[in-house]
Length: 431
Image (cartoon, rainbow, N blue to C red; front, side, top):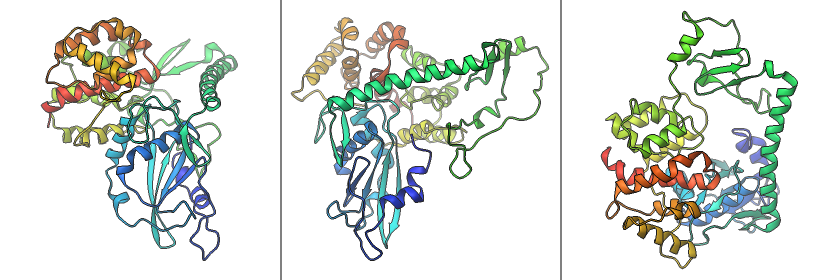
């Protein structure tokens, strides 16, 4: 992943927006594996933009530059305010409706030679491959798109093989790196920091980092500790201060951090939780913003606007909090994966499961044999003909016990299914 802000640095944009001469309005750069030009911007072309975004995410990341003709790469500028005025939440929703896992992106406008252009940067995905979740327009459900020399196409075997091999290698290297570090330092000198509770535990015992200090911790990417572009760092100085009570007594009184397991379990069991506000806060510290939220908001007795204000006040790293706020600000959010009406085999399988859920006749073997299809089907049910108790009973009985075994793209589909149920059954209870 690039350093924060580097993708829009002067050097990077200067490379992309380099002209043939001081008097020419033609760019030197051509469309390539990290660059695409569009003369205008229109969200009606969301399928096309999403396809390019996924292709970049599965490759090395890349830019779509709006206001530039592809041939002959002439900078003409944006003729309307569509780019500046479009709803960022709608773009996020459009990408999430079409692809999983999530695609991360950033947006900028620039004035070049007296005209305005728009730039969207799509990051290389940290979890690959990014897969299309619905058929429509230029998209095909189940397809994996990749960037080839200025074209976004269905991935070829060699690139897919490399992605899968790289993912395995990356995970193996991370484990080896940590094991080597443990070997260098020694087991007696190793401690683990829990970023949720602030507990630092090792062979000799444990201590706690102050709750006030914990949110300010930043991790620096190896090799990027430089003053001009490096990430901000926090150096811990000073002496440890003992608490007035023994450590073991303090440990007993530290509340158990609310994590993904607790959030999902509370929703599946439809529990009235002791502190719903803390559950909403906890989501902002997770790796994904795709969690049920309206279920907890209704328990706070607060409005959506109040909840957004609460989330904005949190001092938290990453984009999850901001993405969650975008969700809450959407007038209409959709989590549907695929469709039920196309001639594709997957559509027929979803429809069968939906009908079985409607008639309360689902065979549990479907969940074992086709977990993804089951979660996809859940994103297509509505409140009219479906029994809420029946749906949640299935999830509690057949899904909750195996939460720890659901991973990758299947887990993304599972989260979307929960968000859909949250939307249809609990959003109407909040304002």
